[in-house]
Amino acid sequence: MPSSDSSVSVISQCTIYPHQKSTIKSLKLSVSDLPMLSCHYIQKGVLLESPSCSFADLLPSLKHSLSLALSHFPALAGRFETDADGHVHIVCNDAGVNFVHAKAKTLSVDAVLRPNADVPHCFRNFFAYERTLSYAGHVRPLAAIQITELADAVFIGCTVNHSVVDGTSFWHFFNTFAEINRGAKKMSKSPDFSRDTVFNSPAVLHFPEGGPKVTFSGNDPLRERIFHFSRESILKLKNRANNTLFKTTHNCNGNGNDYGNGLSESAEIFGKQCNDSWKAVPRYNGAKTSEISSFQSLSAQLWRSVTRVRNLPHPKTTTFRMAVNCRHRLQPKMDSHYFGNAIQSIPTVATAGELLSRDLRWGAELLHKNVVAHDDTTVRRGVEDWESAPRLFPLGNFDGAMITMGSSPRFPMYNNDFGWGKPFAVRSGAANKFDGKISAFPGREGNGSVDLEVVLGPETMAGLLSDGEFMQYVSAVE
Image (cartoon, rainbow, N blue to C red; front, side):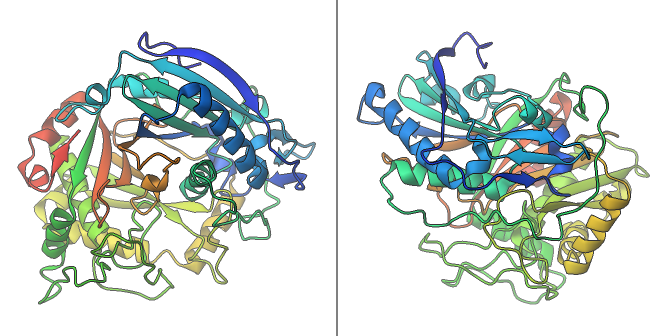
């Protein structure tokens, strides 16, 4: 349990069971689920103001809402089981999830959201199952909720097995939990548990005795910062990246659609209206687009600046990797609320010399072309490639020159209002963090703003904070 930090103490824990028994017996892990068995459970949470009610009243409400939510997401209350043929299944046996109540009454909002400072380590103690591999779902619950009382706030941390969910499914569940707690009588979006997709495969992934190991070192010294980018700053980057391709640039004209199509799960910002209300804009539909998006421009700037401050030799190959949401890329499209992993990884490579000697547009265009090219044919080719040699996902920075972008600013993270207000902030635990791991969140004010959670080695982080080309676009650092 997360009790190593003396400021956080676990008060109680229990198992929460679904309100209704599952009608689904089992779900076989797919080509997209299986590689995540060597990754940590996903850990994301929201910092909220203290509710007006007492915790004695709040905790039963949250437990009941979680029980109702699990009835809609029965896979999360199950366990893994490997059959005689080596296939791993989620057995939807209603075994329940872990619920933890903790206190950190010496911590305040001001202490944990300090401006111009690294993210404090206390956040990793606001989550259950720190650095637990997803393979452990054979013996551990597939999800856990931890409620941590601070002096003037509450943190709700959600931990879910990464072989059960990708980011899209994670936030679907977390949003539903919040939606039910604030009084919704009917789910706004039901999950799709069908398994008749291209990712369903007879291929078997074999594991060493005792199960897989994490693919990166968890003991390297790291620093973590949150960099905030306003809509205006991101549009400046977009205009700079496109200035040799277009005579005009696109500013907000009431449509807010300045992020382009064909983006990855890490980059699928489809924008907000200028009045900060979500309005759907056309998703990527396989059509090619020549405009570099706002998020691709931001990613290219980060790639350039991190590569520069790492002081890599010019011939050294650098890699910028991002996860692609495949639901809408396949033909026919998958259900947008398909529950499970439906992602693939896009690596974009360039030598350090090429990336730094060219302008921003050059690197942004590399990212853009790779993302737009990831269509139905590419997705199916990726599945076939994996089936020919089943393997775990190689998460990490193996040569000192890699960046991995995860999460997405289009995930509705700030929709996690449990009934007493919008979150102050979104934070993550220690899971899957290494030098070069970046997570993209929406900015709290919406309207196309973005927060980047950046994890780097100490010297590299110090260099990034001094990199003028990068920092000129940063609105705030937390």
